[in-house]
Image 1 (tube, rainbow, N blue to C red):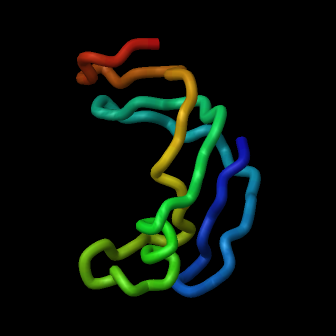
Image 2: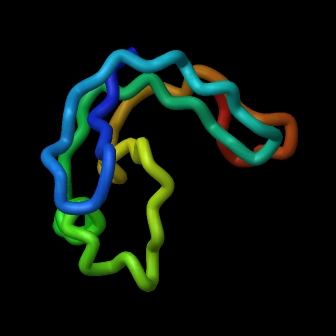
Length: 81
């Protein structure tokens, strides 16, 4: 799968091939059909919110998305494949 990743604060995002993530019991895996960057993503990338939202790098950018649910964790309710 493809993901937009950050290697550090204040660096350009890079599109990378990554492995499909394993989900945990509280997670939902979504096959993304469309995604967008929003002002929060830009602030996270710049490091201006580092004190409030510290990132672990390589960080996957993009909190706005639309797609189909592929898998749900064992403890997830209200969402289904």
